[in-house]
Length: 438
Ligand SMILES: [Zn+2]
Image (tube, rainbow, N blue to C red; front, side, top):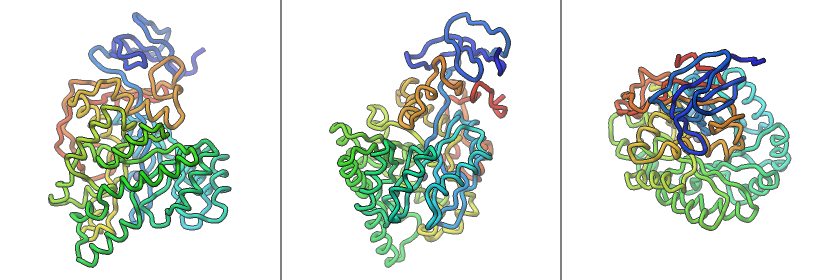
């Protein structure tokens, strides 16, 4: 007896682990059941998918929903709204972060965040625990989180408190547990010095943002953390890699067989620092800053040659009214932009234009994250037995990005007017068609 009505997707081009194949795909009890020609269902619904592409549900391992940031502003998408927007865009799983309040035990932060996420999330979710402080019992606190199911931790090297001794403690403990350490790789002391200089010169408009964190600081931080991680055998995941120099460090480390993965975010693939000279530039301010076109091109090469493993968004939207509060001083500006809903449309459209195959795109938007974060083969690929998360992609549909037509709680888009070819028209999560896309 099936507990959930089945689904049959007929004649779609399935992006399966063995390669793309035009076939039928049967879903039963929320899982992929069979893949083949001329399949039938005893009961359930048939979706005709001739001419369409069927891809594994996307995973965005890097979002910040309902997050109170240092600017005093809370990101404008909550778990319900942000994950609904995700589903509109073919994303069926998100990774969010538990940030402890000052002095709060890590495990408390994790529990609180989990409760909040559980209440609202329409997608599946997993949580990374951010470690910001170094109390004497830090190691025990990490273990407590592990016992509560956390498998991933994050450090912010852009924060002054994240020195070599702290990194050493975290790397050692996370390695012993067999966990994964996410790293925001930018050297905090140098950022602080640069900010002081800019402050003294009275140059705190958003145009100065790239000068405060030049790419050398990203490369330097990656070198620093990887040297420590290598000592302990810690698995490292560099979030939002943004520069050619940073990428070179990743390549060097990979060639030396260091266990490192790198993530790139859509904004660094699409936009460049010239955007800071346009009116309303503060609306698109995020960390790391946008870089040059040479950096952007290097990141695309990294995606094509496998040096970069995953694509994410760092989705952290704010309304214009929230951004306006820090308009003239980037040190007070709410940093972050919306992206979870447009990740697949933009990556897939731009990626295809640049010659990336559907397999590579599915790898970047789903399979690689499933592997790195430990969900594969239950997630991240269309194969019998896996959770039936997918999106059906119409490769011909043309769409112009317009924030008014999107579902993220944000009243601007950094990609306003961008022409997209191909769109995730229908999302299925756990074998159920997402209501919004029906
Ligand atoms: Zn982030």
